[in-house]
Length: 156
Image (tube, rainbow, N blue to C red; front, top):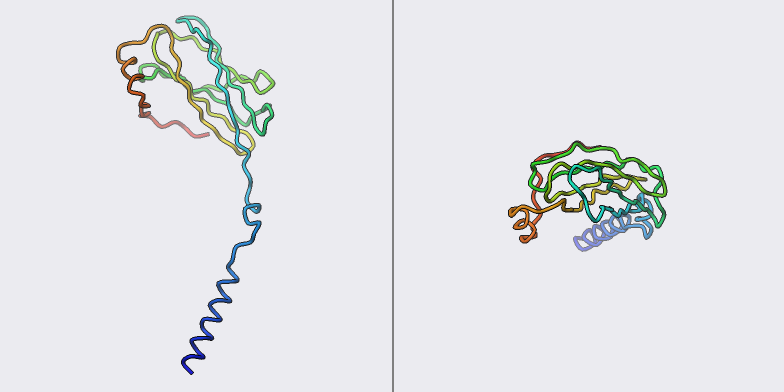
């Protein structure tokens, strides 16, 4: 009798577990994101006190992105002494977005692009140099360690 109850219990449990098995196409039930990709273009030589244009080219699924949900540029000096407000980039067409900026001091800078299109959000960052680097900036680059950002930015 005990054996029959135990066998019945095992049978019922196996039925319950088999009912919970995954469907073969379960991944297709979820939204498939097509990643947004970027190429940040910085002029080879940037001068102090001169308007310079920084660009990004956005692609998604092998095509240039026209009318992205948003494209914002965040620019600052690596040591934190200069920080521009996040600004919306201007759409130029053919997947190109740009921002013109006047830099009033030399040093190591970074640009962070905040972009979104069709559910994909990216925030690539790139460093660039204007003029001469300070001794501290040279040491920073030699260490190869990214500086932690102290402030939190608004989310879009």
